[in-house]
Amino acid sequence: MASFRKRSGGWRAEVARLGVRDTRTFATKAAAIAWATTREAEILASAGGPKCSVEMTVSEALRRYKRDVTPTKAGQKWEELRLNKFDAELEWVGEFMSDITTD
Image (cartoon, rainbow, N blue to C red; front, side):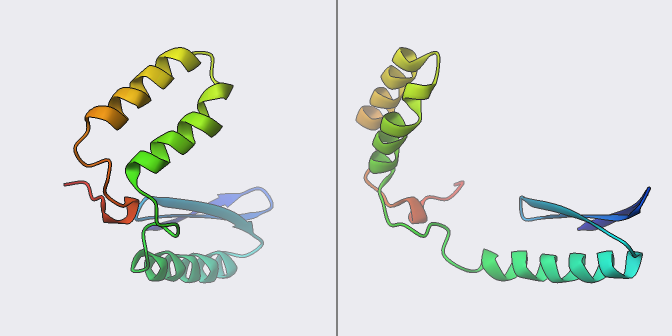
C-alpha cells in the first residue's frame, strides 16, 4: 500500500507491503507514483522466492546469533542462558530456517 505526502521540496512516497517498508522523496507526484508502483511490484515478486537464502537449521542460527550478536549486549550472560535453553529444549531446532512458518 502506497501513500503520498506533499513536502516542502517535493512529494514523499511511502510503500508498506508484506512487512517491507520503503520511502523516497521526488520532485513530482507522478514520479512518486511511478516509483511506488514499481517498488510494490518488486516486493510482491520477491515474496514468492525463497524465505531464507542460506540453508541453516534453527539451532545453527541460535548458535551464530549467540556468537556474533550476544557479546555486544549488556545482558550477555542472561541472553546466552536463554539461547542455550531454547537450543536444548525446543523440538523444532533441527528444522531448516526456510521451513519454519508462523504456524
